Image 1 (tube, rainbow, N blue to C red):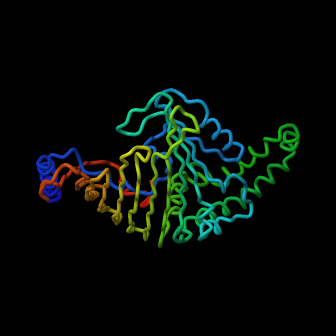
Image 2 (cartoon, helix red, strand yellow):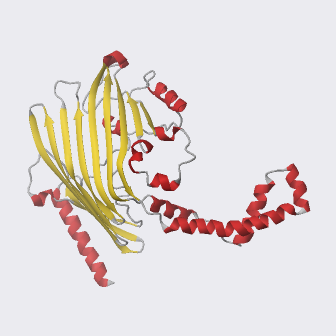
Image 3 (tube, rainbow, N blue to C red):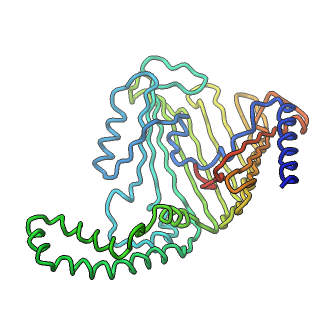
Length: 377
């Protein structure tokens, strides 16, 4: 125990010391360049407080028309995201068919995002009546494979084992003379009697299925393995005087995240191209390419990424590099140590490798999720 405490103290001391030497504000944000879930928001550079999710064609039409209506207060945002495939019901679509949909994901998982803002792009001042509109799409081209976790069979078996005897007791309760007369007056008594039958089968201080077991099984269902490819694109339109005839392309971006996923981690590529200020004489273009990896075990998690950026603006261009890494270690059953290291993009500084290293540490009582989704925001 003493040796563990000494080792921990040494790690913290070195971490603090190197962090002070570096002089940087902090390590770069991990996995910042993932394929955006809502490209329209990303291309406009906004984070809406509220997002509408219309579930029918009519609801989408109403939301869309309201969004492009009269301008609101300065800085006001409107955001919408929807999946057209789920605008109608699909009663014949089974769980197994959806989980193994293959190229059908091109339309089953297609999402459309839409946003309107009266705010100006970063570093610019907007004239009166200026508006921006973002339109984006995201689609998983490859979705990998998924094995049905054992927890599904466990939950189904649990339900079946309780349902059979509970149904028999329910029928007995219904056939009791005093209950028959009450059911004819109050039909909700049927549900009440079934709850009583289930409670009798389960016994005291017992639940049919706990919320924790459902959450754990849902997390296992989200685990996909094999080759995965997410694609996204978004464009931003600028409107002088908030009039359609004054529309001009202001920005455009495309994202691609190929990955190979395993149960305990994976390796993902990062590809992005973004064009900004297309409505000005001097626009800027950013190209990003790199790798991101993660390995997660029961008591430790290690993750990192390396990104190369090509930045073009006017007649000049520069190549930048970002390196980021995170290590999480379980110190005690309720305490996790998190150490981050890396350097961010910085076009103005040219420093030695030692000066570019930046450590930070943190202690927490919850197991980190690094990350819950390797390739999407």
